[in-house]
Image (cartoon, rainbow, N blue to C red; front, side, top):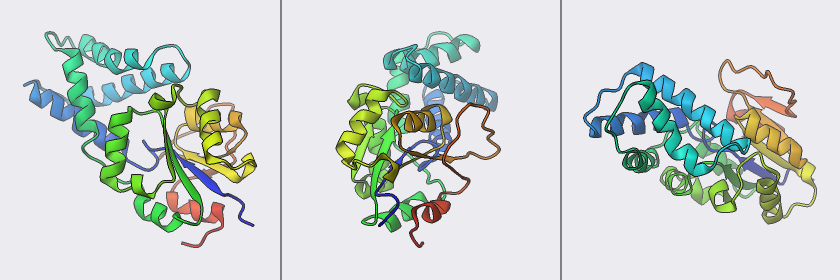
Length: 232
């Protein structure tokens, strides 16, 4: 009997390279507005964006506050005035969803696993953006289900998000469900609280400074085959 029957895949930073799409979208929007953007601003935006997502995970802000607040913060820090934040946000989300880059040849990995284990996406991203990126990348068609916090009404790591996912997946033995993600605060914390097996896709040079203890750690997605007991 297979050890696992279902894999819950995180998207950004796990299956798809979010930094690549983020950089493209931010640069495109600034160029469209006739504004200069520096490497420092791109790096700083990534930090701001991460902090807003963590606040959302902790229930401190709403999704709408996140979507516009991160740009308000960036523009304020760099003294950028006269920008229509809502228009910028809409263009950014459209651009973000129009490009993708695989992590560790993730599409081929998911293709190899198709039919051998149930595969599901679990993401906190904006629904329209994530669906478009997943379809363009070909990953959407390989999944048995797509779980997006925006449509569920609760983000990872909240209990309600995972309860919804597990009800749809249908596997009653939680120890046969594996979540794979790069975020300790959402993927690993949420998965552990839900009672499923956790696999931390450890970003390069990342250090676990939390109280969490993932069941597995991998540095390349191809290592998932050994965990699942499936040949490549």
